[in-house]
Length: 274
Image (cartoon, rainbow, N blue to C red; front, side, top):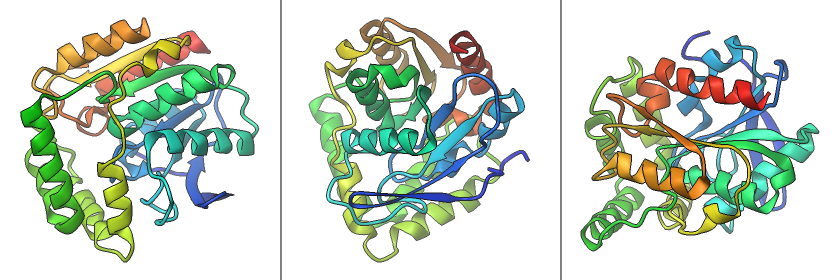
């Protein structure tokens, strides 16, 4: 089971498109929803997912608008719009309350939903998210150039993932996984989705003020996306009134490069909420 997601793909039609997800359906305690980051798929949790299910949790993963097996073309790809998709999925599955885990781009999604629908969110966890972070002018310029490059030259995304995102351990299947992501960026209509993601507001300031549920901030200590990853984690932790865990040696994707350490940080938090 390691490195795979056992449940088969299921689909939910919502206004504007079709969402792809999977659901283990079994497990005690509050269900856990795992959301991938920008330009990624729900398989980004392929190494963490089995550790959570083995611990007895019901785990749901969902592909974001434009990527994975979810519809490609939408009128809005923002983290806020994705929050509406998550709520629709919870309604569809008959889940009253869930723990939401957002990574990178979707950290903003789980914060948004926790603030807007507190009765549906038992807790949130952010994994290397951009929430409460404003890059300086130089970094904003670099990110704008990178975003434009990824829209027109998908190999740019592959370069980032292979050469920058994993400064420490590398998943054994990284090259194969990245090949699939880059190939997906080249499929018809994907430029629109890519542009929607790279221009989405993934770094909101102030959204955390509306969150009242328990929160956990997980951050790779070597995340290359931030000049000082721990300072970003501290800012998020303070804004949410939660707690943080730094994943030593990890880059931007600790659930892939150090899934056991990520599980060790996440499981006690889930146990408390259960």
